Length: 188
Ligand code: GLN
Image 1 (tube, rainbow, N blue to C red):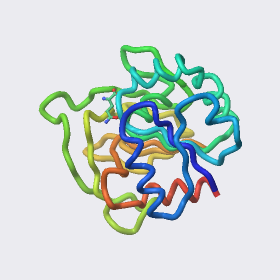
Image 2: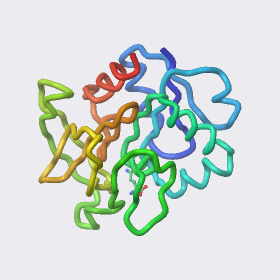
Image 3: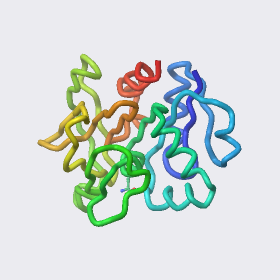
Image 4: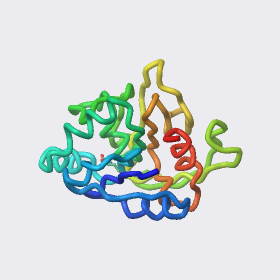
């Protein structure tokens, strides 16, 4: 298995380290050439979705990656990656616009800029999972074919729709690989 990590901006190194820990091969996607050889799955990291969106277009990665995701390439989007996949972003134009979720980009406001929590996601792991949120988006609505994996204080923070997995938090910034292992199972 070979997983491509979008490495234009943001927390991509941490995803690589987490995959290394699980013994999964990965490579960084920085330009169009990088996606010419076949690969099995894609990770879109956290960072800044507007910047990533612009770079995706500038580097001509946007259309080919969108097509691959629409054709079923498994993709894991964390935080900004979630925003990039969403069909609707409140008050803004969507980016890939593939996943049936409506996202509020900076839902937590300044006072909750960053925070940690812990919660159980029985479909993902038997044990509680540590959650790190950094200027996190919130999923305000999800279409009926989106499976909700985790809610925190009544808000959806992890979800799956077919080949797409998203978290509003950053599993790669903790030692806990439960969500990544769930994704690996999706890829298999
Ligand atoms: N708030 C950021 C955005 O809008 C996402 C933050 C993150 O990825 N940690 O893109």
